[in-house]
Length: 239
Ligand code: AP5
Image (cartoon, rainbow, N blue to C red; front, side, top):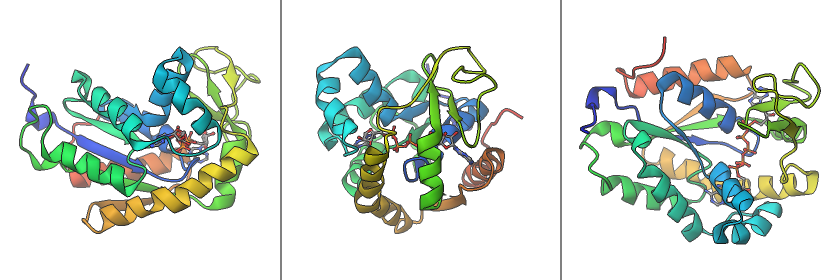
């Protein structure tokens, strides 16, 4: 079926350190604009849970807080972006994470890959969510995730009504394997050395905007929605 170009949102890339709120904001953007969240962390964790070959390789790397090799990530990203729910756009959460991944994504988008309409809107909007180091530590050590649908809570900042139970679907809340303090430190180091330069990559191409991720969740999402609509004035959100 032909894609209605007037309803294209295009790719939105969320950059930010572990705990900055990429997943939280990606879910709100997805609900507002009806485009999917494509989280490389979630895709990798799903492979780990299913015990695929990729999951077996990625599991120990993720447990150490290091980045999974690019070629493994490229495979899952290109496969996911081929799905038809990405036809109007998508939110990349956790990808790209190195300048090489950013270059790979640019090449993919330039090729148009799968008959995308030749449209300016396919230039990604890159939104970096800025949060201070100590706040990141508080967020990551307090995070709890619901087993059924990945709803995100925080025992310090956004506790569930009932201890360890998801308000939305009643499933159990768990601590992510890599939210242990020694692994958190490694993840933050990997961000500083490998991912921070990605912001420079996009800033140099005039595509980067930053938002203050220390504001309350709703104020961050209002800011994010404003940036999306400035980039794409006809973005059809759910009012
Ligand atoms: P990934 O799953 O991508 O994790 P991450 O980047 O470390 O990010 P997080 O999911 O920890 O944080 P977030 O920014 O989504 O924050 P959240 O919204 O949950 O990656 C995991 C691993 O997979 C990597 O270490 C690597 O091994 C591998 N991997 C993934 N992608 C890869 C790639 N491209 N290449 C190679 N390897 C890759 O929020 C955190 C907490 O803060 C929550 O409790 C939330 O409730 C709270 N919170 C959020 N916003 C606010 C706010 N505004 N105010 C107060 N609290 C808030």
